[in-house]
Image (cartoon, rainbow, N blue to C red; front, side, top):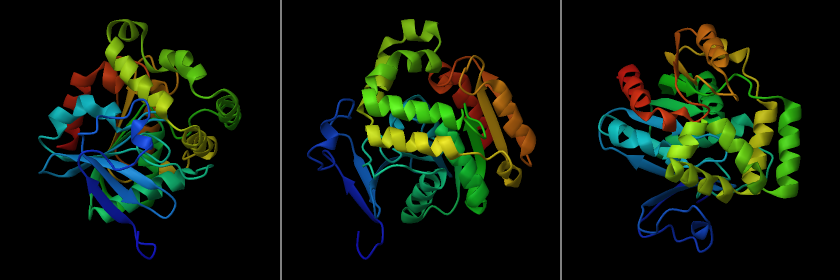
Length: 289
């Protein structure tokens, strides 16, 4: 970074970071790693596809950009797909917590600016869905269409997130795996897709504690219940039929309170994009095209 201006770094054969890329769950060193340096941290991002409109994916809490792998082979044929690890997750670095929803949203704006992306579609899940809503409210002129998944205008309560933060600061993330797996995936998926579940939780436990807690703080304060009325971009809200975190009613509420909204529901729990990839991909392609 020169004079406070974000700078881009593109590397092959690893990112050149001697420590972070060796974390459990990190990707092989022959994968391409691109970074945006910001004043307090740097964002890891990846672009798939070379033509068509831009499509940005925003991840859920405790995951990295590979949570969207099941979508890439289909969508990158039609879009330039931009994925990134939010601060404190994946291969992005970790500024000091706490964070706010506006911090997460401004990270995305900085990434779009650095890549000269004037307009983009956006798809976000859980906290990524809140980030997508924030962007549609505060940078709506840059958002073409928006897909929000397994999210709400307010996820959980302040008290529940404060308790989660206390638990993680005392005990780390390992103790959350069992309960998180039950919230994220149906029993059948956990039993039959062991590799996919293991891959997700490898990235979960490699999330930095400060990054996880910082995003929990953002969730504790985030409430877009009144602001979503300002969203004018066409919006598709998608729920997991058995999601205990953000049930279908939460997504129906979002669709009902924006200017142009529609709600659909797919089999699965919180990370239904992994449980129902084929119908999810087909709906994304149809809606965004």
